Amino acid sequence: GAVVSQHPSWVICKSGTSVKIECRSLDFQATTMFWYRQFPKQSLMLMATSNEGSKATYEQGVEKDKFLINHASLTLSTLTVTSAHPEDSSFYICSARGGGRYEQYFGPGTRLTVT
Amino acid sequence: AQSVTQPDIHITVSEGASLELRCNYSYGATPYLFWYVQSPGQGLQLLLKYFSGDTLVQGIKGFEAEFKRSQSSFNLRKPSVHWSDAAEYFCAGKRGGADGLTFGKGTHLIIQP
Image (cartoon, rainbow over the protein chains, first blue to last red):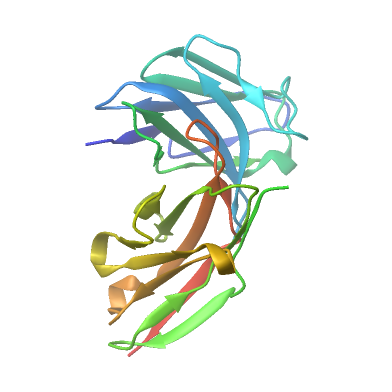
């Protein structure tokens, strides 16, 4: 149980375009979803927290107009990187929490490369 | 500010030997603490967690961790490592149940034959 999927697993896009990443909780209802960013050989940094039906809360230094997060249902959250630039290239990982549990379950991540 | 520190970037251990990965935290109150493992090309897997109660926590794959308030530590241990344990290990913490996680920088575990 507690499986989280992400789609796509990797994506290459051109500078200036937008790309959407989906995060789904497959077997539980995720009241809260989190988005993290991981640079190569580095740790995960929390970008934002989203609760179903509410606006996302962004961490300091994360541009909310660039990283659009939508959590429209209890099983789906999306992260849209708008007007992507090469410096946005990274590994984006989502996690989900729900069912009264404190722990988060992580998706496998999405590798974004902006050319 | 809340933080989680993993002092060791790399650890090399011989197969069959014991392992201890260090983690220190800085929180005003007792945080929720976690250890995750990340293998190449795979997502983060939860090894164990501590919220309250018994300070020695048992996890999956033979791992355990001990919460020591006096030392602000939550070190991960395994009595005998296997080659398949080679991976990146992250300690993480948060203040409250609904919060996002603060991760340490990770410890890269190398297993020598």
